[in-house]
Image 1 (spheres, rainbow, N blue to C red):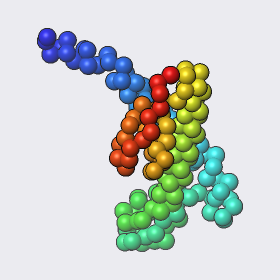
Image 2 (image 1 turned 60 degrees about the horizontal axis):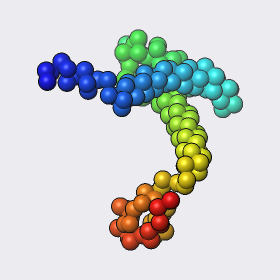
Image 3 (image 1 turned 30 degrees about the vertical axis):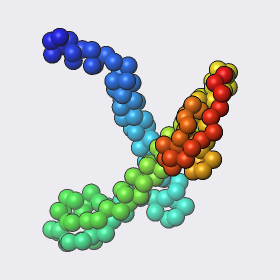
Image 4 (image 1 turned 45 degrees about the vertical axis):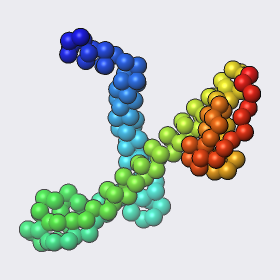
Length: 156
C-alpha cells in the first residue's frame, strides 16, 4: 500500500472527518461567542458597574514616551508603555464561561437523547457503580475506576 493511499484511507476515516468538522465549527462558534460577549453582554455590564468598556481597563507598569496618563490601552500601546490589560482578561473569562455553559448544555442534551435511545433499544448501555458512582458498561463485572466487583445483570 502506497503512502498516498494510506494517507487517503486515514483522512477519510469517520472520526477524522468528525474532528475536522468539530474544529471548524468550534472556530466559528468562538467568533460568535466573542462577538456576543464584546458587543452584547459587556456593554450593559459595563454600564452597571460604571465602566463602559472592560477592554480598556489596564494598569501601567512602566510609562512610555510621552508620559501618561493614558485614557485607553491603545493610547498606552502607541506610547510604548508596558501595561497589564486586566480588562481584556475579564472579557476572555466571560467568553470562556459562555462557551463552557453552552458546551455543558449541549452535552446534557446529548446525554438525554442517548438515554432515550437506550430506553428504546432495550436498556441502558451503562450503569452506575454503586461504590464510586462511575458510569460503567452494563456488561462489566468490575468497575474500571475502583475495581469493585459488580453484580452481573442477565443479557436482554
